[in-house]
Length: 617
Image (cartoon, rainbow, N blue to C red; front, side, top):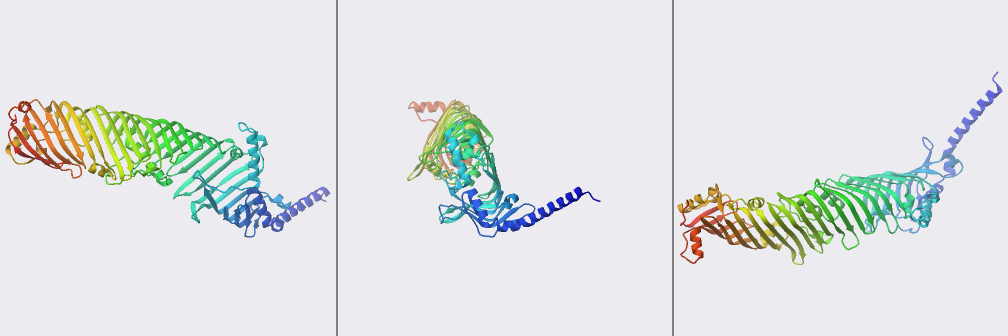
């Protein structure tokens, strides 16, 4: 016979199983009668601080998790009944506590919002944020924490922070919209992620992905003391933003009080700065194809000002160091600072901050100087080695300044072509149009190297000399600057040579008569004692007032005009024996001279003899 103890155990187990089965079977009935729609809405309102309305009837699921499925859920402000809901969700799944449900309570730890629409507002900082609830457990916890922080801002008593539970909020396939002109405009789509905050006095994390302006973005935020942060205190904060155009990260401390600030290490990188500016719709879109940029810096940000100390900058793989200061307190942002590079592409540098640098094939493109109305810039930079197109420079000291319609890039000192150069590029926006001024002073340079960089290969003085160029004029496009410029060009050179000139062959051709190409007599070099050039420029046409080269036996001179727009030449010249040139200078009988005319174009000049009087040796 079975023992009475065994029989009682079997009956106890059987009874427990029946009770459990009845409880499980009764849960949907209990939920449908006691955990009714209004009770869930009330609990969600008390939790969030918004007025929660549930249009559809709750559906209760027991397996695999005990949860309520709600449809057509809205969260609205209590104080503005006419405003559209802050959050609308087609479906909300709430994980419930079964034991609490049996007691008639609603306790949930996770809420999943499916296809929610979140309405945001553009703040003064430019960020889009949802409306802040005026009540609820979250708001009350923040108010309590604010009192704790105010009691000791430097070291608040964390043990006095509220310990209310929060849980996890998940969202899937949502979107953010903002009201523009009375219509909802989508700011963010495909929003998916979750925010986890077990208790108000614990750490919190948020991860989200979405599509912003056509690009997939990912955001991760975490803080071990989020309640202190929301209450206006100082707390650690980490942030990571990733997208194809750019990535950004911050690791440090922050405060969200009225005197908000950030202090920590920040990193930013982008494969194309131009793409970032266009994607962010910053209103500053340089015309040059700007390459990669990366920045790592110690950042200290307060209201209206951001300081970048110990900044490591790489622009188109040109690394540099320095410090920057960004001020947002004036009508336009103000960027100032100093940067030092080992190597630097000046064109990339200019393109990164202004649209001043010309690019290959951009002669007919209009120069956008409207950026001067959107930013003030004052940068000092230095570089041990730099390039400006094909020009190599060393020991460069330069400035870039933009303010009140005036844009200036100056190279105050640099070594190039074996000498020293100084240059300036200025754009001045005026009512009648943008005026451009270009200045260049090259001292003690190698004339041959300078001419090669300028694209001149014929009759170039090879020797040490000084060149000065001043151009002024309207600047709608790069070509129009040179087509319409006024100014002057002067150059003096010491002993050296004239490249690509076989003078005996030249004189022989002039004696024979008939025109000939300059290329026919370019297989030689003429030693000279010095050369001097003076030209005035008017509307893109250079009038050569003086162009002389003196050798031991001859003096060669040119005068006339050369057009930049058509590349045409209309020059007259002559070759005089040196002793007869000296006699003419002393008022004696005129020299025996070989005169000629130079026509054609810059690339294909031809010579037409006028008179023949000098014989080559």
